Amino acid sequence: MASETRRTHHQVTFAVLAASVTAYALLQSLVTPVLPTIQADLHTTQNTVTWVLTAYLLSASIFTPIMGRIGDMVGKERVFVATLGALAAGSLLAALAGNVQVMIIARVIQGIGGGVLPLAFGIIRDEFPREKLSGAIGAIASLSAVGAGLGIVLAGPIVNALDYHWLFWLPMILTVAAAVAAAVFVPRSPVRTPGRISWAPAVLLSAWLVALLVALSQAPVWGWGSSRVIGLFTAAVVLAVGWVEIERRTATPLIDMSMMRRPAVWTNNLVALLFGVGMYAVFAFLPEFVQSPKSTGYGFGASITQSGLILLPMSVTMFAVGLWSNRLAVRLGGKTVVLAGALVGTVSMALLAFAHTHTWELYVATAVMGAGFGLAFAAMSSLIVSAVPAEQTGVASGMNANIRTIGGSIGAALMASVVTASPAADGLPREAGYTHGFALLGAALLIAAFAAVLIPVTHRPSRIAVSGDPEYAVPADGAATPATAGSTVVGDRAE
Image (cartoon, rainbow, N blue to C red; front, side, top):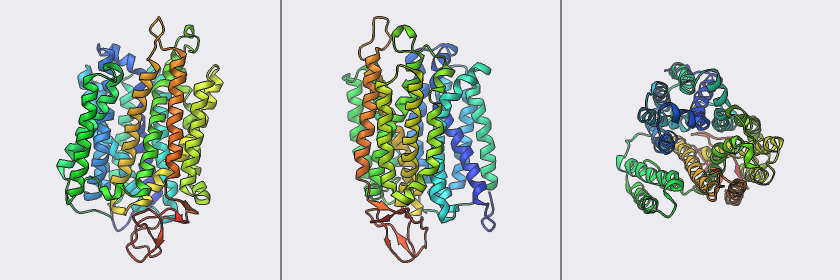
């Protein structure tokens, strides 16, 4: 590891973090457009091959907050390297998988990589100059979403030039390089939270997330009213209530419930949930829409590569706008930027729902979508990190990313139910199914705009203070007030 006395320049650290987050984000979506190819090669069924996605999603949902908490305890850089190692190992196993069972196990191992994002935020907070924190956090947040979009864009060319196994070989190579660089260059964590993992909350967290996400992913197949789906939803609620109660009572909680109750935290988490509903459903269903045969009257008969390119404008505008998001937050306040992002995202979903006759309309819609998501994701990440003490950065940002993933599961399941509700005689979805589905996603982002109104009012972010800064601290309501030594972090001044 890098020396504590002679710390690596923060720009080098940022390059390592950016490469790591990109590798993880690519693996979120690279396999989505090629599931039929994997299904044929591994001689499995359509229902079984969907677990290649579901297993990864379940694993990431469980391990994201856990790895963030462990990083806060034992050192973010150590856990960061270990997380990259697990991501690389899972990619290697997936590349070599000869049957669907091994592929699913590999995807579970890859899901441990969900800890990359909260650990990256924590390392940035530890290592970056105060005036650089917001910009770096915004850039990493944007990369996490951009990488997921680029995965769909790149999947077709990679499969055409090589084969689908390289969807795992290439990220593995990038991840191994990032892990070596992290071990060499990322400094040891100066901020740690002594303690231990309380395994009862960890088990309950895993249990209710598994119950919820399995119910959501299988509801379109089993039926929303089936006894299995209702039973899983009931179990998820009961287990979640038990998890919250144990977290409140344990001396060393996995996730501090008092932290989660802060207005600046729970409001941003609610917005993240609703944005996840919109983003991941579009990733899953827009390529399917444009790949539909022209005989349907709405499809374009596009190839995997062509359908991926539809999402390229979103990746470009998301990253570009994400880099400027924090500058806008300085002038307008983080709350205003998140609200603007939600409204812009709503417009993009309306375009997809009601203006999808020509491909240029889809390019415009995805470009607008990227702008909205870029605004919101960067600002939300900064607001979350600013609202909690330094020792809780990993678990707070991890839970925010996790909630966005859960939102994605909800969005994909709801979209699947709407799109496939009334299939045509040939078994393909009707155009009305997609229209109603994209309109539903627009409604979710409109609700996100109302949720953004609840974020504590802030304006003119001056800088982010660190532990020991005598000027600003964050009380329980997330607003900045004058303080003495021992302050936490703040990105915005309250009005």
